[in-house]
Image (cartoon, rainbow over all chains, first blue to last red; front, side, top):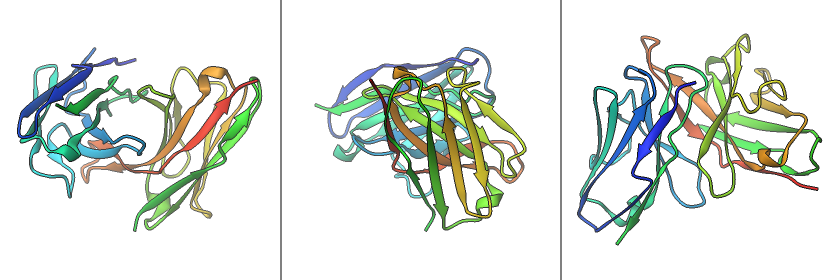
Length: 107
Length: 123
């Protein structure tokens, strides 16, 4: 099974900051990588699919990229409503594993 | 609008069984694969199972394989998860999610998700 490792596990930043979350797969997943946001007490929602494609309705301050085996989610200009846990997920092969999550707080 | 709503959660003793349902509306149900994902209290997301649009292919995560069975009824726009031999570690919120596939059949992603249903396995 493919293991997905996210870093950091916890992140605290100020409003307006740029934050970066990284996800690494234990074996190649090509571009089959999605990012989800889960706000406290809510179901996850899709942010990014196919490693860099922004889901409709998601603010443009969210972006994502790939470099080798590392996938990166960037929030440029952090807003209070971005407080959430962020998960990567590989959709290359079953089981379609998730990263362990990155919990983002506002300082 | 596109909507998924899970039901059937509750409290069950270890070794017991439970069947979850996920009612879909607002889209052509028979055209999409569907997934179950769970989240234990205070923990991260764990992928559980997938069923193809026509029900002909299914897959399971290693922790539930052989105990859980995914199925669907395209005439009722409903997805199911039959959970047998339940363990304390199966305690979680169970989400259903619609699979979307790129037009060229390459990438896939989960959207939307239902609000979830809570399963508690406890004696």
